[in-house]
Structures are given as structure tokens and as C-alpha cells.
Length: 207
Length: 207
DNA sequence: CCATGTGAAGGTATTCACAGCC
DNA sequence: GGCTGTGAATACCTTCACATGG
Image 1 (cartoon, rainbow over the protein chains, first blue to last red):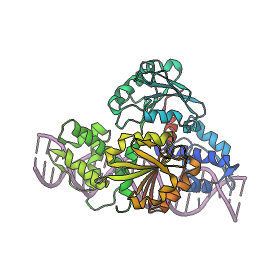
Image 2 (cartoon, rainbow over the protein chains, first blue to last red):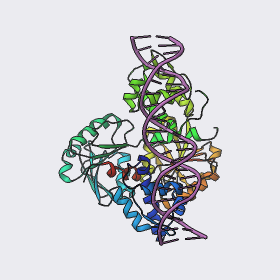
Image 3 (cartoon, rainbow over the protein chains, first blue to last red):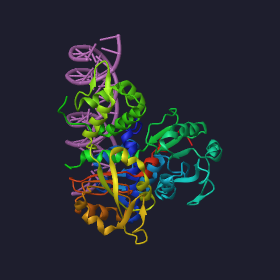
Image 4 (cartoon, protein in one colour):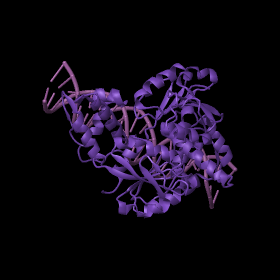
């Protein structure tokens, strides 16, 4: 099944598997079966094997998967096998937290620049990154930054995205709680934190 | 189609519609068609009508939907029609940002308590909420708090969740980058911020 | 005439079951 | 014996097309 179109849902699960594999490697394991990985990440073993089958034969029947090899394969598929430089736009409460967040490194993503419109913030250094004036975003491509994290207020989210698109950015993670438009060539993922919380009560038992 | 099982995907979209309706109401609109809502939230009009059809007849043929009425209906379905008190566990960088985040109010969610294990943080007040010792989580039910936001390090995420379950919590939004287990009666939604970013490179054009 | 609501059709993703391999 | 990889079966979700109602 090597040369088929990959379901989006499979791509969504790959980082989950990668995370699980890295934790398992930390514990000193070398091989893992689809069953044990399933128990660890909360996805059925059928699903895991099916997902991997889209990309090739990673496992050994009777043995399982070599954790290191599989992790590297997933990193290659997700194109996380090179360190990627990212820019943060908007150094408010959330932006500052994101700057300090160590989790991005897990996936080879490195926030190397930060921008804000507030003169009070410009020049300050947070977690080793100096906050620059927002006008600097226009030259991101020259600095070999193609990935941006948007953490600005809703009202200026679209104009921020437009500017990033103009600057040659190719992928955007948007934390502003609204839809933003971008040309098809630019991938945008919007993550509205409060919205995730909003569907909790639906699933909660009465009161 | 009033009495059918609701697709999870529909439930996931309801907060998107609600957000769109509230913004549209802000602009002074009173009615909206599935077409214009579609353009606004980025979901096809077919899909929107289908989603609403699971719950009943909210619209008027030839006119569209009354924005206020539809928003209230969605709030009722999602059970966001009462203010819900939530607790935050873990007042680190991310936790502090969440405390300051105004977006939760949009959906009637109110963080009224915060807990941390670090004695240095206990007693300080952030955004009007005093940080308490983590032992206080055991009495959350008595304070009528049934919803928790977990923003603790990965290593203590599971024990934190166990403790919350013991305290009678019914819904958990987990920001720790790992799977956590809980009884079926407790709904857990895990949101790994870095993981969302991890699938961006896959969709980005070369380099 | 316009926009909703919904069966039916079509497409996508998950689960199953087992052949093949170590 | 144990575990992978995968066609087939199933379940789920989306899109379509149109009858129905204001």
C-alpha cells in the first residue's frame, strides 16, 4: 500500500506516535509492538498498523518495531528531521508562555525570533529571544524563517497573517480565536484554546 | 431527524458556529443564512444545515437563522448556558497565561481557583485568583467546581488527574504532553500545543 | 423566489480477519 | 507462537439534490 494518498487523520496521529516512541525510548526500550504502543498512546493497534502501512514496512513480524528506526521514519515523513526556525508574533501572556515552552523542541521546532507592536515590550529578552518591532516580520524569509506562531489579538489576526504571507511564510499556527484566510500554498492551523474547553460540558454528566 | 445520535464531528463544530454567531451579532446583524455563516466560519453551508438538523428546526426557510436564538440553542446543546466554575492546576508559564486569558469567558467558563505545588507561588494572586496549595484540590466538589484545567509537567500529569478524579471532577482539559487515563465517567480532552505545530511541516512546500 | 431541512448517494476512515513472515 | 501488513467489511461523515415551507 506504499503509494497511496495519506488520510489527514493518519497525519494527525503521527505526532502522537512519535511522542509515545520517544518516551518509550527514554525508558530504555528498543522494540515495541503495535499492541504496547497502542496501550501507551491510546489508539487501537489495528489503527497503528494501518497508519504505518501507508508509508512502508517499518516492522518485523513476530518482533515489532525498532523504536529508534520508527521514530526517525516518522520524523522524516513529517519533515521534522531538520531543525526548523520559527517566529512568534505577539508577545502577550500567551506568547510569552509559548516562548518559554520547552515542548516545541521535542519536534525540532525552534522559536528564534519574536515580534510585538507594543514599544514597551520591544528590546526585552524573553528566554533568550529579543522582542523586535513587528515591522521586522517583512524580512523573515531572508532570515530563513518559514514558520510562524501567531498569538496576537483577534482584531489584528488577519492583517498579521496577510503580512506573514507577504513575507514568504509557509506555515502558520494561529492562536487567535477566529478564522484567518491565507492562500492555499500557506498551511494554517488554528488552535482556539477556549473552544476546546467549550465542548467539555457537553460530554460531562449532569450538572 | 430530531432524535438521532449526534456525530462527534458535529459537536466539535458547534463551538465554531457559536463563535461566528457571536461575532456576527457584535456587528449588529439579526439574521444569517447558512451561506453567509459558511463563508464566515469556513465550513460548507450543506454541512451547517446538516449539523443543525440533528437538533431541530432552528431556521426559517426563505429567511435564515435568528442569530440570538440560534446562539442560545447552541449554548443549551453544549450546556454552556450556565456559568461554569473551573480550577487551574499548575501555575507555571502556561498556567499563568491561561489565568489571564479572556477567551474562556466567551463560553461561560470561569477560572475561580488555581493550585500549585511550589511554595513560592502559593499565596500570590494572579488575575484576581489566589494560588492555593495543591492539596486543596481534594475539596473541589464541595466548592462546586467540576471542571479542571491541567497545566502541570508531564511527569506529574497522571497523578494530578487521579487526584482530580478522586475529588469529583467531571471534565478535564489537559495541557500536559502525554496521554492521561481516567474513568469513562470523566471526560478528558488533551491539547498538546507543540503537537499541533508538529504537523505543519508536513503540509508546507519544500524547505 | 429563497433558504431550510433531509433522505439518498458518495466518499473517507476505522475495524476486522487472516495470510505471510520471523 | 507472536506480530506485522493489508484487502475486505463496516461504520462514519460529507456532499448532493430536491421537496417543503415561508
